[in-house]
Image (cartoon, rainbow, N blue to C red; front, side):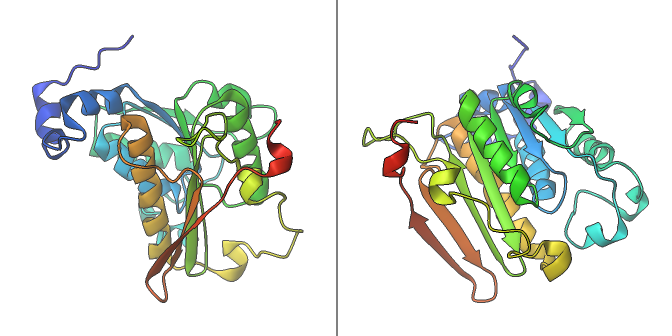
Length: 257
């Protein structure tokens, strides 16, 4: 097991965490011990990676096969103008290293697919999905459920965003099995029904709101604090500045799954 003790510079760096009774030094060591995989170093992945690196997550894996383009910079704040043309995993790795040299970054310059998902996920304690397409969201949810690790999944479009936490392999406080992604969204919408951000646009700051909330949920799950968004979908309407939450349960026909 790697050394998770905190040296004097880390104690100073994480002082505002350590003074929190809910977290403390032991909780900070738990964060340092954690291995988190982030799917996508784009609009959602950028704030997720920034805040988890700042929080002291010990190892961050990044899965992304894209390169930085000029149109990314309106929202993907982990990248710089000078990074245009570079692989996003390289740009993000450099930014994380500049922010917190105590964080180990594992770069996976691949596209997540059915052939590599299980092997990638198996090396981590928690996965955060910041992808921008339904195929990847369903693949991530099914894979995480299959191997029994938590998934924080989020989505954005135009001026609206949402996120939830998935742990369908575990029972809730009421003894009932937690719901899965397919209990919330049984099937992807037909092709072309929901336009992508490239087609419909997205306000840049929205990705910061949802991505930061994803990072917060990940910290809660890892540290065992608070009430993660399990069985709850948090929705944000940026134009009206309103949050709303809906609860969802495991569907009856899935009880035997």
